[in-house]
Structures are given as structure tokens and as C-alpha cells.
Length: 366
Image 1 (cartoon, rainbow, N blue to C red):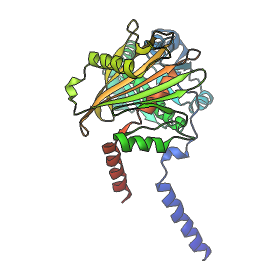
Image 2 (image 1 turned 120 degrees about the vertical axis):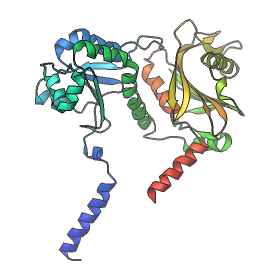
Image 3 (image 1 turned 45 degrees about the vertical axis):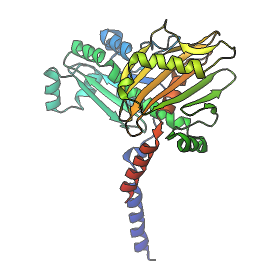
Image 4 (image 1 turned 60 degrees about the vertical axis):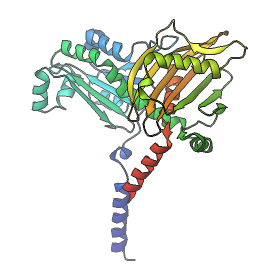
């Protein structure tokens, strides 16, 4: 083959490979530990009411954990010059925040990313919230926040606190899933659950099935100094209107009293109702669902910890599902352990879902 043909072949091969690569794959990897959000703003703003609103939104203690732990760990980094920007632009979670007409470097940075129409829109009383993925690094979440005045910006951050936290929380959960299953997982065990029960969940290499009945599966990870577990329960030919917040709590208590027994004859897992229990509506893979977070305790023994519960009705299977994960780790912080269980629960798929996903993938390949 002539050199000219070799050159042409190289171009064709490079072009074909490039079509399969996303632009983010050419970026450096993002850096930072799990749960860390870098806040980029002026030091005066950070020390004042705007910084307080940011800390209340992202750094306040999670009410459903047994010891004080924040929603996110915060790192404050002022934007001073190009060198300071180069140091922070690979951070995994970034929030740039300033009033629109702020004379600070962060204000100038944000204005430079808005055209005149956007700036006029913000000055007319419409706060700006723009999320960008993989902007300067792979696996990165960047959020721009601005408003016409400092007061408007503070009010916006506080009013939108749950949505702003969820933005970073979703990506943290996805990162956690990739890390959990980067080395190994029990695919054969997950496939056996799909064959027997009509659903599948990804299972780490060191989890074991503790109980498997006609409509209840309990899967545990037992380590010398901590335990994590989750269960899946379902009811056939159920009605979606059966699900209410109080029904979820009563049903969970009934299930754990029956199936999650302690080391003593009269010990069992139950809700810790003396502490906050937080329930909200979420979208779980396209389904209306309730998310419940709180603390559990072992009746008749000295054990306890946080839990996460997701309850929903699946219209294709006509089943009501309850997915529930719990942590017992007395010597450790619990936030990231619970996030790991949340990541596992979000891998849940029914047989019908998996068939639909496979059909869509086949269409895209044709």
C-alpha cells in the first residue's frame, strides 16, 4: 500500500474512532474527594449573608443522620487571577456565585459568560442558575449562580436549596456507582434474582443473601467494624393508591420486625420515631415514588443507624416495591456509606425495564 493510501486510511480510522468518543473524553479527570463542593466567590461575600446562605444550603447538617454531618463538605476558593482559576478548574463540583454587577473577579467571570440579553433578563429580576457538565474536566459538575442584587441571590439560593443539592447529589451517586463496581460485582447472583423474581440489582463482590423468600430478599455486607444491608420487598397485583407516607412507615416496621431480627430472641429492627423522619416525592426511573430517610434502632439491643427507603408502584408488573438500605457503623461517618447504598438501590431494574433498555440500545446500533 502506498504512503498516500496509508495516510488516507489513518484519517478514516481516526475519524471513525472520534465518532465514538465524547468531547469530555479528551479532558483531564476531575479531582476531589466524594461529597466535596468547591465554592468560588469573593471573600467578603463568603464572610457575609451570601456566604451564610451558601453554607446553609450545601453545608448544613443532614437531619436524618445520627451524628452531625453536612450535606456536602465545602471548600472556599476565591477567584483572583488566571493562576487561581487554573488551580480550581479541575475540581469535581464547582459553584461560581456572585451578584450580577459585583465588581469582584467572580462577578466579572460570570458576566463574561452572559450575553447582553441574558444580563438584561437577570437585571429584570430573574435569577440565573446554569449547570454545566464536564466543562473543564471529566466527571465534573459546574454551577453558575447570579441575580440582580445580593438580596435576590440570597433568597434564590435558600428557596431552591433542595434542587441545588440534588444537582450535585445525583452526580455523586453516579460516581459512587462507578467506583463501587469498578473492580468486581456478582453478576451471576444478580441474574439469578432476575430469573426468580423479575427484577435485578447490582451487587458488590462481598455482599451475601441473608434471606430470600417469595417476596422479600435481604442482602448484607458484614465487616468486623460495620454492616450495610438492603432489602427488596414487593406485593403482587397492588394498587398505587395504597402508598401513603404513614403506610410506608408502618409497612417498613412490620417487615423489619418479621425479617430483620437481632442476636437476641426479642431483638428486631424498628424505626427510631424520636428522631426526624423525612419523606418526599421523587422520580425513580420515571415512576412516582416516595423517598423516606431516618434512623433505625434495634429493639432489645444497643444498635442503630441511618436508613434510606424508596417505595413505588410499577405499572408494567402491577407490583408495589419497597427498596430499603441501612447502615450500622458506630465508629465512622455515615453519609458516604448511605450514599453507597443509595447508589446500589438506584441500579434496581425490572425485567420489563431491562428488555426496553436492550431494545432501545439495539435500535441505536442499527
